[in-house]
Amino acid sequence: MTEAGMPMNPFVRALSLTGFDEFASSLGLNPLEMLRRVSLPAEILRRQDGILSYRRYCALLELCARQSSTPLFGLRYGLHQGITVFGDLLYLIRNTGTVGEALIELRANFSLYNGAAEVDLDVQGEQALLSFRVSDGDTPGRSQAEELACGVAIQLMRTLAGSDWQPDKILLAHPSLNQETEYLHVLGCQSVFSANSTGLMFDAATLALPLSTGDEGLHHLVAEHLGRIERLAAAELPNYVRQLLRDLLPSGRATLEKVADCMALNPRVLQRRLAQESMSFQDLLDDTRQHMARHYLQDPAISMAQMAGLLGYSNPSGFSRAFHRWFNQTPLEWQRQHGPKRQPRLLRNRRSSGS
Image 1: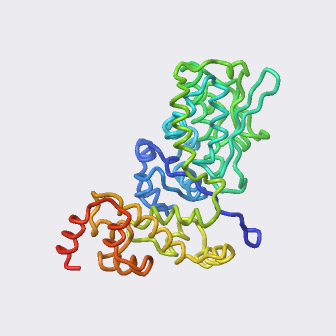
Image 2 (image 1 turned 60 degrees about the horizontal axis):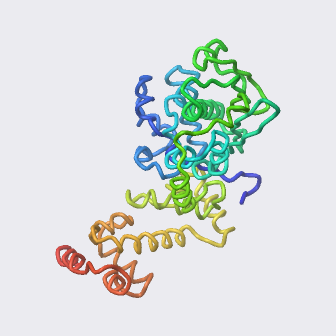
Image 3 (image 1 turned 30 degrees about the vertical axis):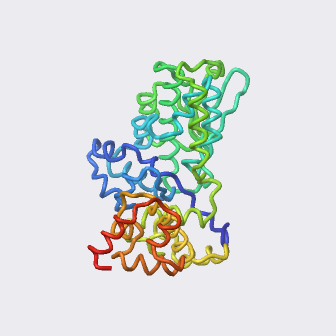
């Protein structure tokens, strides 16, 4: 939902920053300082299933390009990342029958990891175009992100079609960010700038190439796993907030202001948007904590003190009071009815904490 012409701020998985610390350091940058300057938390590098604002992601790429005096930072970073950026989706892609089927799976499941862009595959006669389109064309730093996507796509195609594979040409929807000879040096093929779309143009016959790694059974299992992951493109505002809360709660920083900052929104704007969904920030915070608490109570390895910390409470007694308010019973009583038999551990923890 939008407000007064303001588009919903899209998100990408933190998986998009795979290898960032290593690559940024290789160019003389301080990775943590770069993250700080665009208001991204350092821990985002350790939580690949977390989410971050696409605008912040693009701002990071743009900042790194300037600070390292590397105009093609995004392109080089994408080539550096390669297929590692796809996470579990890579197993789904590689266990299809042909290159074409793999790219169709990529198109169908891209929104699992990126809610700001779409991947498409179009065949025009003897040519195929694997394209990448950002929904918000005014995002600062978008050009860096588009070139990064092309770098990743080249490495994916080399994985699928052979290490010597080369596109016929690279299409970029923006003007050149550096000398065209530099693009030729990095890519080894022609680049077309200010094109109608961004992507790779290549021989359509490539789509029929068989994949030696294809395993139909594994493909089915991975498809079932990915089917349980929330798609960023389909998620509405409350789901975005819940995902951020799950990431922020263990650090104790799950406040309205922090969540709004992660979304690159003013806290008042976030409150108004939630109100339009007939929700409040506190409702979502309580709901997220309740779901997390029930999940943790099933794990015999987590103590009461650890559980309280994971839910953002400073001590177990605060968690116990909140839990009683939610369910009208203590965590131990709930566990006796619903959880595994691990009461002795909880009881020991309660005695040692004096609660």
